Length: 146
Image (cartoon, rainbow, N blue to C red; front, top):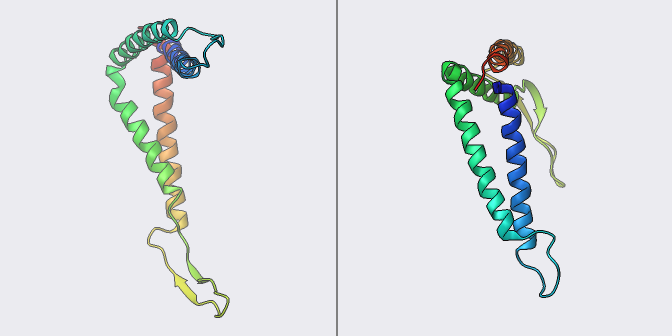
């Protein structure tokens, strides 16, 4: 199994765990005499087995990724930084501060330290590095077996 296949299996197991948890929560308590669609004790056994399989596959993925772990961490942090930069305001120039019912709006002059073009250029650079690292990781994931 390649890492790509293992990641798909990991995600499938996670979805399955969520469904099993939902079944336990839904069918553990029922009004006396009403039928249960699932036996919570049996579902709990299945949940425990599924968790064991998830731990195993996550461990195998982690071991197989040791050679590229730094790239994985860097990719995550670069994505976080790019997302943050997209949120910072770069307002410049005059803008009203808003008005109340009884008063006229005040006008403020805004200035930003990091300008829009600077921010956008930095984001583009980050996204290029993100794409490069992602391509390297995709190649690793398709070529590495666990």
